[in-house]
Image (tube, rainbow over all chains, first blue to last red; front, side):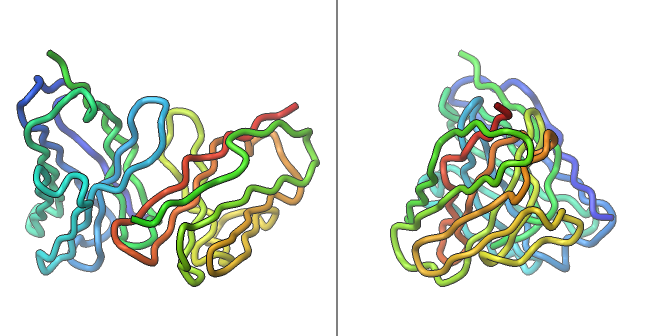
Length: 115
Length: 107
């Protein structure tokens, strides 16, 4: 059974960078596309971007200038970095398997941007 | 970006009722439409992929239909455990986009 677990700081200061890690178990990250998706408190879902094992990435144009998604096959981990955060970046961040259809999700990691 | 518009934004129904949610895409997305269920405090869970295919392990009371720009999602007999917010998502174009969600409650 594929399992995903997000980890990282729950509090990030305004204008600094947000960094999260997603550890995958029960399957290799080299076999699939992997996405990051976020959800502001009480709001809907926003796709951030995906990575394929080859290193190929695609980002939401609304975040493209600030986002980097990477993968470490040796650790079976994915990473998300979002620079220059504002209050609007406060959200639960999910990693999910897939680039089109998201069939396995992590439990989510709440990141709050503080001033 | 393709805009996904769900209707209604919320609904209240009785146990055993048939519930239908619609999702309209701002342009033709063929049948590349998924449906997710999200319970409070939990991650979304894939129910239907490519408009009408039931994900493994999902109860058969859930179904989906449609193609092009107009899609629907149906719960044939609402159960207490179906209380959740439901989202549609298009996987035809990048960036992937979601509907705003439909909150389903028990009357």
